[in-house]
Image 1 (cartoon, rainbow, N blue to C red):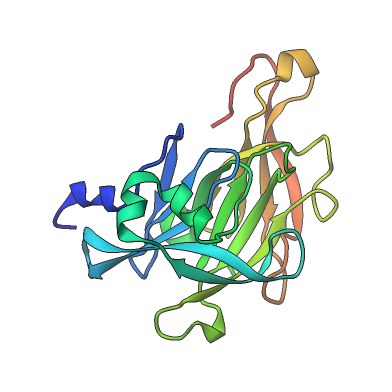
Image 2: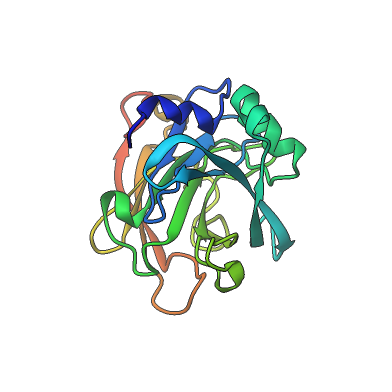
Length: 231
């Protein structure tokens, strides 16, 4: 990366935090911690140089459920994203989620049995709409062509699938280990009042097939004596 200041090209947002993950295609992803935020992809004009490039936003185009299914990366105005990337994505029709807080990919901290091109996104928002789940984005959808213009979004950890409502809440931070287990730290920060722990969970990888949810979700640790994130 010749010009680190070029990261500004990813856009500006008035949000508390932003996560950027680099993947094998040198594509940063941006997630803002806000009520209805979008997932963005940045493709540099010249590989390895982030001083200029095109920003795309993820849009679910053929839903198979709640904002999951076939998706496309839609291009955004280069001028608009430097003012407010999330607003530009919303205007273009990109799919919004409630408080996408963190992203993780195999090339960051560990391995993934589904391959290195699955991006996990923690959706923290507990209401309006209720997300409170972890989604996975297959970045190498077979019909995407050489530029990988398409993707497939699916639920990885969700109430009623492999998580219990009222037990698993407000997933916040993600990390993969070398066995493909996804560690998920919560952020309710209400343990002393609710008597429920602020937990760290382990989502074990699915045993077969593509686009499957985690095989199981197991509580790894619990913080019960103070209001804090177990990050």
